[in-house]
Length: 230
Image (cartoon, rainbow, N blue to C red; front, top):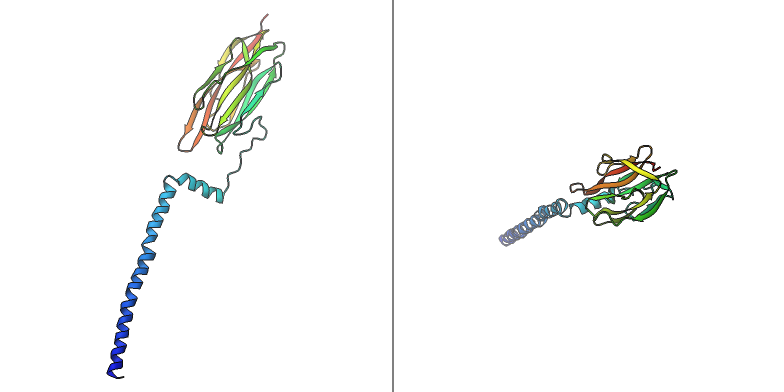
């Protein structure tokens, strides 16, 4: 090989070395350096303000939550309703189940015939509570509960209530009692009066579980015994 050819070959090798080294280093920076940044941003989104949204989206795509089933109940989840006993009947039992998807309850009511104690002078109470506040109402003037009206607020995930009261003209109510709590928050509710007792009022406190994102009420009931006024 001539000296000129050898010199030319050496120059080509040096030029190739100089051109290759920066490109390889640049590729490493472009590929490796952004990856921790992107990973950090994604972790922040999942664990921070968007964690619930992200978790819900992931859950929805992998295992959709089944819709709450109100079959067998008088009311639907998340809907306003009005329930009234037939004429001469008064409420004697209440059942309810909770749905975490709506933060609401479906309700079931049972009514019992008053026998000789006919009911009259019926009226609806005003709303007995505001959303998120204590519910407390007792039918006055020797009257019993014969119906409920309830409106649901999706933002508050709570209900406000009216009670229908009817007066027992030929009977006297006495020995009224407050029940123990009929449910735990989000738990099943079952309440029935004793024999010859009827529902006269309701008391409920509002509970909010911030960690679980659940809202519910804990209910107690007032029932009174009926006897002939003669």
